[in-house]
Image (cartoon, rainbow, N blue to C red; front, top):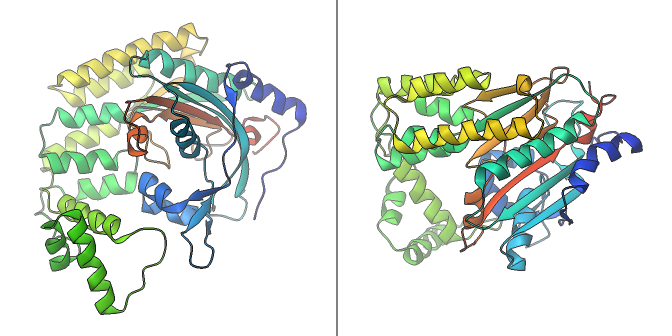
Length: 378
């Protein structure tokens, strides 16, 4: 396994200092994480990036690829309404290429608040915190890229698409290959349901009955399922995929509108003007989202983030697709767009998916010290 070099102590302390000053509780997370849960949250395409571990007869686990999900679960287990948690430790992701490290250090903060929280203020504070950590590494060529998965969702809502199609597009947000496949289908007929007759039968049954039928099919076919996913979960995933595939496709005009929106990548003032033009006629939720962004920019400026380093991209997303609001990346010109040195975003919906019943708000940021360090990765 390729391991990232160690950051000199003085530089690491400087990068770490803003998070230590944020008044967060220091926590850790188990290195082994449940594979099935992470794949459900991040998508099956993440499997190739994970180091999978399985004991004989046990459920599949993986080496932690990130800290966010693990710390969110810990927060919910505590039963606290709010909390701030700082972490520092290694993460593991299988990499493509011979020089990319697969074990690397992360420093970050996860912030959980009650429903009445000042979302715009929390967003700005978290982004500004990541910026302070990044610039402490000594690089002078940094740019802060901003995006918003929720803005795309509001844009889609304003198009008045069929519910299944709108949901499919929202799930593809931040995942370029899925989005391109969806746009390429424009004007075509609905695809046949994956799984054929079996999926059709499962969709007509209650979840418990669908699971029983799937188990019976496995038995007749002599199939022994592996991993930690049960028949009920697999049956429901098949049904959801079939329902999504059978939804109508976009019209060519609708696809062109989405392409124009997702192509926006400019300094904020120009980007906002282009996004508004692509969304005309805009719905109320889109207009409110744009107003919130104007407030975020003012808050970022007040917190010391230089406005001439800001860019806004409507298609900005991360490898983990549980983000549903603000997203951001801090990039170095020397490292390029594919090696961001800090990332983060809002993931309110993840909390409900993990079992939260209290509508907890959540946002976090992560810094890669070796990339932030001016003498590090080039």
